[in-house]
Image (cartoon, rainbow, N blue to C red):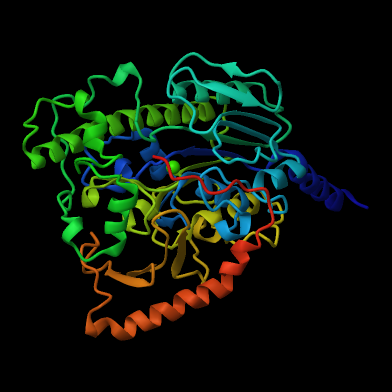
Length: 488
Ligand code: CA
């Protein structure tokens, strides 16, 4: 064999086994609304300033239409790990377990020679799979001085400090000690900015004397409105800013910390609750952003930025006062939408924006595809590689299927223009073009009758395609815990 053949062959082999496979840094947070990332340009963009997250968008791609298929912590996390809908991976509710025969992307990466690490919040009942090292908090974990369990020692370890800071400290220590001959996949999963949005003392003064703009539908009268879903959410979950007597009423939970106000005036209470929530939340997000900056700086300093895929996302969206709500769970926009920012200079043009409909089940196949690892057939999502390269496949999906298994139980299909919801045999339809705030349920209007029928069929076809049925859920064979009552 002559050198002209041997040399390229050797180069190919060496790049496949050590040199060029990209590293992956997947930074993930809990309940981070895209409205609280300035790159998304919302009404909060001048208040929730996130320069480091914005940098990922400026140097990579910002996804505008990424959604979860089940808007609550554990299920969204399980869908991300497995590339499967909740009814396939078995995590329907809080604290569910991933079934044993579901694929997990970190396991596939590990098998192919990646170093794999996870630090922070896991919040799935089954243990993390496919990690050389994991160090995770139990359940929600604490904002200050969190305690971790891991697969490298039987001892619990308590780290002194603020959660987002200490998770990042540990992630950077692992990067320092990495085997430089092998690619790595690091999952840095923050607890923040989950309720009650605790922040480090360095942000005590942030936005102190500022009035945060209110969303236009802050004072929506849900009780007298036309949405069964919103009413059910108020009656069952009660995540409202100010509804006296409700267990999860934000005002009742945090009154003592609020600015002076007229407690006899309900509008004032509502308003002051919103200001308290928005400021606390943004302070907590600011600490997430700072730690994202530390990771980006590390990659720069160690010349890893070029060959490392950096992904930032959150398990679902979050109500920041829209409809008077906080929290998530519903198939409505601010709850359904996930932030997604990806930087990979070798593939993605800086400053690009995607409007394509992506789902949390796409993350796992994307990581594998970008790493050059085969995607298990059981994964239901699609790789975003084409989109990241600026070439959306012609047959890319035009809608997302949604199902929430706890209370209020509902399912939905969200197309490019409409959100169509079924709750307890009733239907809701929102026209996102004419009613982006989703204030008018038009399902019962005569002129939309044909559209409702069309969407009923589309939803039922979607269920067939993804293998959803009541029987499929009933037959899930795994040691899942019985559904717990949903907690905040
Ligand atoms: Ca969450």
